[in-house]
Length: 305
Image (cartoon, rainbow, N blue to C red; front, side, top):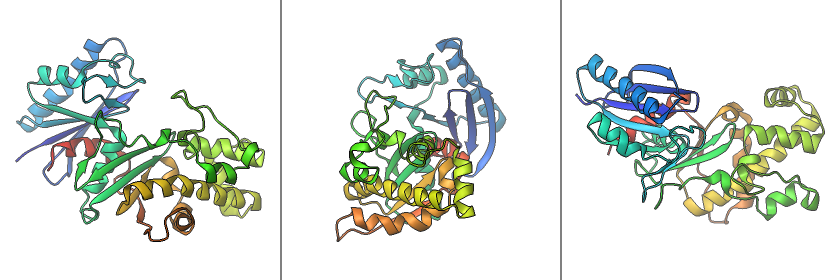
C-alpha cells in the first residue's frame, strides 16, 4: 500500500497528515512552526516525516501546502509570513534531507485539489477553488491536476483589481479604495474577503463590527444590513464573473471562514448572469466538503495522477 503525506505549512503551525490511496486520513500530528532558523525549520519537517515513516513502516510521498509559492524556474520559495524559509530552495533542500522527491504548491491550490479529488466532485473536470477568509485566494485544477502556471503563481485571484462594474456598485468616485499588502490598490483581496466584508460594512453602513455580528444582524432582518449583504454578494459576482469568463469552470468551491455564510450559495448564482456573456453557464457553486483538512489532503494529493 502507498502512503501519502500532506504537510500544511503555516506561519504558526505545521501539520502533517497521512493518507492512504483513497485519500482517507490515517493519522496527523501538529507542531509549532520553527521561527529560529532555516536549519531548525528543515529539521522539524524531517522529524515529522521520519516519525510517520516509522509509524507506518514505509517511505511516504511528501507534499507541501504553502502560504505562497515556489518559483518553477528558480526553485526559490516566496512565503513572506515564514521568514526563515522565505527566499530558500525548500523543495530541493527537503528532498536532499528526506532522500525522496518533495512536491509543493500554494495552499489554495491544495485546497482546490482536495475538493476536486473528492468522490462527489470527480465528475467535474475544471474546478476553481476560492478561499474567502482573512484574504481572497484561488486555486485551479484541470482534470485532477493543479494548474499553477509558468512560474507557479496562477490562481492569485486576490490581486486582480476591481473592475468598472464593481467601482460603480460601490459608489463610483466615492467608492472606498483600499491599499493591498502586495503594493497595489483596489485588489479583490481587500474586498472579497472576511476583512473586506468588515471594511465595506464600516465604510458603506457606517459602523465598525465583525463579520459574525454582520451576519447575525442580517438573519435578524436588519434592513440596512440586508441591503449591504446583497450589495456585497453582487460585488462578489462582478469579480467571480470575470473568472468564469476566463476559465469556464464546471464547479466553484468555496472555503475559508466566510464560506460558512450559506446565503451566498442561494444568492450569488442570481447575480452572476448579469456579469457573464449571454451564452455562459453559471457553474455548480458549493461549500467545501473537507474544510480545515483541505490543505493537508490536497498536499498529499499532489502525487496522485
